[in-house]
Image (cartoon, rainbow, N blue to C red; front, side, top):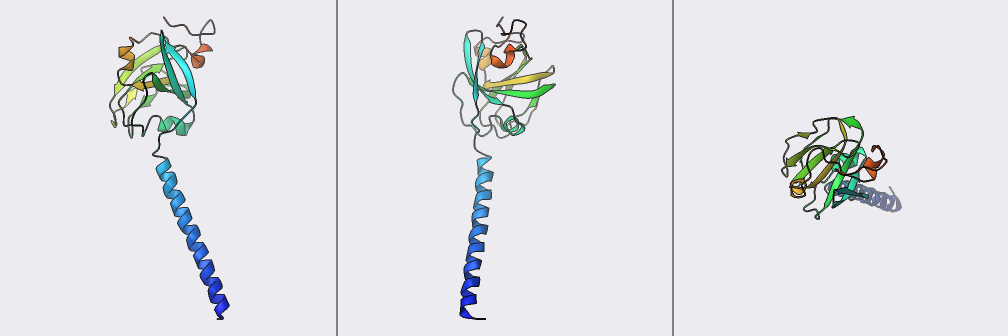
Length: 170
């Protein structure tokens, strides 16, 4: 073998090693990116006089990640989960670092039921009726604001289901 071919092979070997290393780094980075909190588009909702800024989770990935990996959430902020069709929706708190309250909501924004959830818990919290929406807020938010089962939340996701075209709060 001539010396030029050895250099070529050594150069090719270095290029391959560089590509393998870059690929492994990219895989590692994407694995850690899955541990990062997601940031989603928001919608303004209200519960009576209380305004809510809710991130909207719609895709399977957004729905499954939810509020995981967040160390805090601002007051009056939350996440609205929007499912394709009504069904019994169940949530757990795996990889969720903050305690949350969840309200399961009918298509018209009516609060079906509310549950309190502990950070990191694998306990399931389910809707008592078939629903398409669930709203997660900081733990105790609904109780502190006087939001109860049967009350209606208002906002664009619920407007189409309201008889008058805009969901009113009772």
